[in-house]
Image (cartoon, rainbow over all chains, first blue to last red; front, top):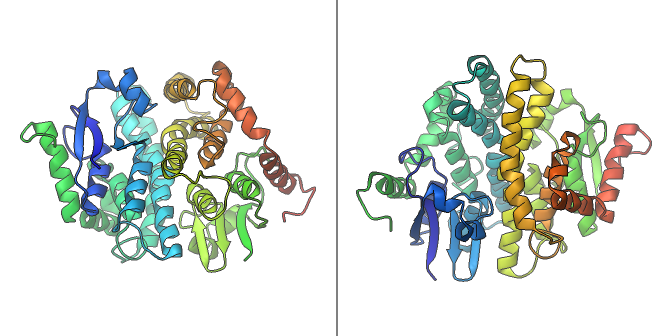
Length: 217
Length: 217
């Protein structure tokens, strides 16, 4: 059955891989599943046809036969659960890999998202400069323990998993801030993720959409 | 095998059910699993013994024999996956219920968390009053489409699921703000969650810890 995902017709980041379809593309590349992409404009995202797929009017979505999903974490989990390569077979190791997925999305990403919002939405506000260090401190409150836990391991818990895919994706949003440089093992962890052939293919595919150099699917 | 979770020795909310152990207690009550509670002080949460369980030094954690998990979403998912009552059996319905878990934690909770942080950490800042409406607008950007999707249904997708448990738990954090009152179907949805016997037992158990009226387990 054909897998179809949605992505921005024109990504706000211009193709730097930060739009969330990159996470889905990466997961599909890791498990070796081909997929089609339907591009959606900002206007179309808020229209009934897309809202029926994604109640919050965002991308990505995932369609496969009768199944329609939204929400990046849920889509990556579905891919990981239905194909080999992103979750360990052993029950406890699997539960721990899933734990890192949730930790990436609900513990590490929220303060990073706050920084992204501050930079994009509140940059012209009078409080921007004074508030920024508070937001950055909240991010460090996550990076420091994450760095301590990772130590000198390659991945967070044994072999690369959907938990690493999600954590690397979340940390990539920090690259422009330079904050990762204070945690060399996290910077190396992110680089290790980006060096995976599956990530490269996913990145190139989303970049091609945004530079118009290749068809989207 | 005994299930042991951790909770605040003294919850910052004084027992209003907003500490995240309530979500785990609720899930365990829904599936009818008894559990023990180990209370942790703020100081002990940042010490090596607890950090070995929870790298970010928070509660709740979950221990069952050799299995140790952290992160609320992952723990609720593990409970839902290993006991009947919180996820549908049918594959597609199950994937959609999981989608709502992730949507609650990664799409709806972040702006709500931002409001909580603003109220607790930034209330004395000069920008507090001017910035608050921006944060509230970002919450409404989630509540309005959520309300539209729920419509007049009891739960988000068929019978009550772990997705509803998580979404109700996230929305409960908004009660004090009064923002839910603008969306009567969401307010009724939250009330429906709170009226479940399993929720009441979970709420009473966490309240007892914070009022000292009952032992914690």
